[in-house]
Structure formats: C-alpha cells, structure tokens
Amino acid sequence: MTFYHFLNCALLTFGPYFVTYSSTFLGEEGLYFLCVKAGMFYVATQLVKMIVVATFLPDMDHTTFSISHGLIDSIVRAVDLGGLAFALGSVRQGASAKIL
Image (cartoon, rainbow, N blue to C red; front, side, top):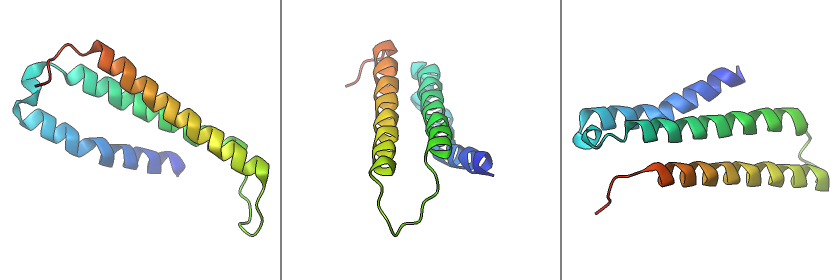
C-alpha cells in the first residue's frame, strides 16, 4: 500500500509538468532527458527515504520523546536533502542551454 501511495504521489508531482513540457515550446530545447534525470533522482531519493524510515524508525506513541528517534529522523532528513542537492548539482552540470 505504501508503494502505491508513493507511485500516486510521484505521478501527481510530475504528471502536470510532463503535460506542460510536452504541449509547449519547451521541448524544442532538447532538455527532456535532463527533466527525466531530475525526476528519477527525486524518485530514487524518496524511495530510499521511505525504506530507511520504515526500517529504522519504529512507530512510537507521541506522549514521550526519544533522543534516538529524533536523531535518526534528523539524519534521514539530512540525507534526503543531500540527495536532492546532489541531484540538482549533477543535472545542472550537464545542462548546456543558456538561461536569459
């Protein structure tokens, strides 16, 4: 069920952009592969985050606070941000289009 929710969120995230990209003149620049690459990085990062959270973060009652739970949650979020920064950096380095 979680995987179907993940697919639903990914399609709702990238579906409108894909329709906009393919129906306008943006496709003339030949940057379709960069958009797909950025989307794949995002999907891979979110998939890894989902697996790590499901594996290492147990479902706890919210009446108590645990330092280890907060620390693991912060590490997962930092790794997620690092993965997105890596994705944006690697996609940006490969772009050859000029921005006005």
